[in-house]
Each structure stands twice: as C-alpha cells, then as structure tokens.
Image 1 (cartoon, rainbow, N blue to C red):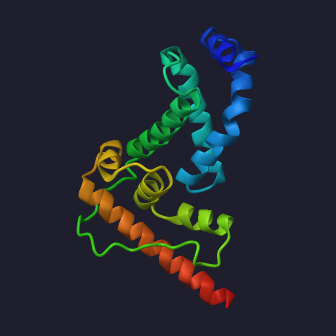
Image 2: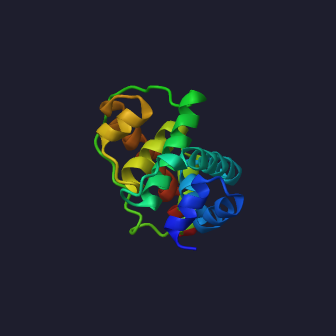
Length: 176
C-alpha cells in the first residue's frame, strides 16, 4: 500500500491502515519525542499522544507538502502543548549573557550520554535548545510556540548551553 492510499484509509478510520502508519513512522517520531522528553517513559506517552492527534487531524492533511513534515510538526506541537498545560514553562529573566558554544565535536562524549544530558535539562531549557539547535527554529518562532518573548528564548538557550558545557567538561575530566 503506498502512502497516499494509506492516508486515505486512515481518513476512513481503518484500524489496519492506522497500525501500518504507526509502524512506518513511530521510530522517527519516537526519536523526536525522546529529545523533547525527560525520559523514555515520558517520550512513549508523548508519542502516544502525538499519534492520537495525528489520527484525529488526518482529515486536515490535504497532500500539499510532505506528510512526514506534517506529522513531525504535530508531534512537536503536541509535546509543547502538553508542557504549556502543565505550566512547566515558567518565564525567566531575560538577561542574556555572552553566547556560549557547545562544541560537541571537540568533546569526547558519546551520543547517548549527550542525549541524557539534554533530557536532564529543565523543561524550558531543553525545549528551547532542541527547537533552536536540533530543529532549526528561530528565536521568534520559539517564542511564539512557547508563549514567551524572544529575549527569554535567547536566555533559555544560553543557559541550556552553559549547563551542557559544564556537564560535558565534567565528563571529559572524569574520562581523562
């Protein structure tokens, strides 16, 4: 079954098509959920919620643009909406210090350790870091998505980078 037929069958509410769509995209979307979540269990919950939203809104997909891009956007929005509802995104001071770069290529750290460090970040820092660094959103877009100012987005990114730099430096000291 090709993607277009699969989507049409999902629009008709066919469970087999929904199961196939889940199998086809759950890995990609779980990876996205994992980077926005504090742990694997929370990522699994976010993946489930995302697919529920995808299936509820699949009628709105009109084949203009990439289906994968559409479901990724729904996944990010579902996770962000969950955090906004739980009021995990408190506004912080907009005092932005100097920009801190986290040069992962210079650090002797494996990807799973880095992902663990990112997951340990406070929600507002983790979400901002992922949206800006990993997904390429601008501070203006992030501020709109999170309901904060662009200054807060910049501040949260700087603090996230600072925390990650400290963790990476500590890891490198422990390895040496």
